Image (cartoon, rainbow, N blue to C red; front, top):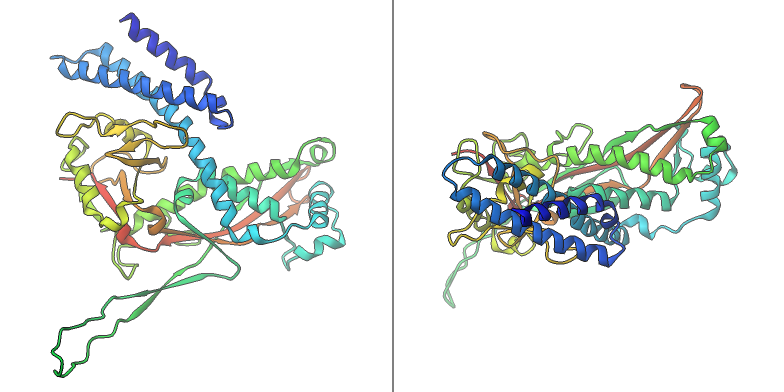
Length: 417
């Protein structure tokens, strides 16, 4: 028992140092985090086995298992943060806005306008009829990068940037047929495939952080960094919700709305995202159902597939074993690598539903092939120092849309018999 208590104390100490590991810049911290994570999971498995062997409910073991589970979640999140940073760098390097050259004169004018409201001639390049001003390219890149770090759906999806009002993708119904014939036999006409189009129209996402004029006049702070942080927090919260459950009204069409029986089940030409049942009315206890989910996905999409679920669902699947008694969930074993479930990466989506009757707590598939995020290039800012004196409001707008581009690359697990 003394050994077990020491393990929990060590885990608690690591939790106190989690912010240092989250920065991802010191490799030694990452090594310590991964080593401690695997030690904690070994302790978790031993405790769970002891609990399963007990003939009665042991309150002490249950409490210890809960604490270990929470510690594992925290440490795994620390390791996962590094993967998000890498994803942000990759996306920023390929986005359309990354090809736009910076303009130092414009950046300087933008900063002056934020602080004093001065509109210099250089800033007029961003003037719109409604009085808004386009943020500099670097600022746009910063917002995009921060959104990738904090929005798991965006980080794992396909993302394109457009400079027009919308984006339309064309699909074929695959109705082409063929046939076998002899050398001199007549050739009957075969069917010709048809086409259908699916539109991805960006909605308007806004935030309105504010600061007093005295703060803007006197504070020796980086106003761009402050404003970018404020906007990122709100945009990230809204995107995380919309990319999963958005109804498409002035916002993206959410991924979960495309599953069989949901609102957008008939929207895509290829049909809905297929659903597999958990085998239980209100729980997830059968590991075979997870394996059924995996092998129901076509082989061409399994190579890049991952599991998507929230933290509470991870806690439930962490206790599942295969037919040989091996735990299906495994922690990260090296920096930058996520936890795995049955050999596939696990991505935490905080806004996924919890395990409950008729809920869909788990998605499995290739997110990049399934979901498309459409960014309208350019973040627009309106400085308002009149309507809320003594505060200056920064009304900030970004247009973003999204929807399923290939439902065949994803499967959903529903809690149902």
